[in-house]
Length: 361
Image (cartoon, rainbow, N blue to C red; front, side, top):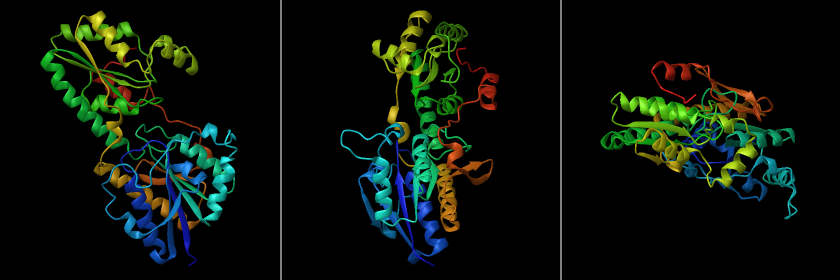
């Protein structure tokens, strides 16, 4: 068997499970094709590293002990897709440079671990003739064509623990606590953590809310004798007036008001309208950090094993996915540029509503 030279990069935001996925890929490649027949080339800082030839040949020992490690041993960086085909002042043709690095290292294929933007660039490189396999990573769980992404369930666990802890201080002081959870375009993370953490109200981008309705719900629950309330807010949540604006218009309006998200605005409004002390909490990047959960370690290993199988088969231009209980794959061209948003009439929203959780609509 001819030696396979496989490039791997991690792109975009970090999340738990990146190292576990790298390990799954590498161990499966060694097992399926023989360690002597495989060479792994690590590319640091994502597509930026591919553009600038930040690559190195890696040894089997480089992958020992990384199953439980958070972050990524390769390092990552955000390189927006919209800038990929633009030649900037530095006069670098990014696509040309990436192809040159790929060919310089004589790669047989390139594995890209990342989210929506990563897979758009992966598809671009695939269309340019490179052998690409994508693996779906994001705590937002919003990649089209897969039921779940690695990193999501760990972030749900962390977000749930945050809300659990917030409940105790909310009840002790009879306060309303507004917890901002990551998720700019999709509300999966806020929805799952809200349900698991027992939030009273969950605000997500897919269901624009009415501020006065939120305050009314808070007042109603307080009058019913509940000592403290928790509102979970996705960072991309918007009220009904904002939902009528285009994205750039909404961003401009918020910038003029000195805000990026609605979290503090909601906290201030609820305190004023409901006459209850209200605090805002933003766990932020804690949701991305730390070791992957057992679920994500298993999922990452499954995804890595499937990617290795695709390498062995010579089946390129695909992204690994989970559908139901099956680990499968989708064409990059079918999923690039698409997002998987919360179905407002779907089972999870129905479940939340059925237990008396409110969405402010």
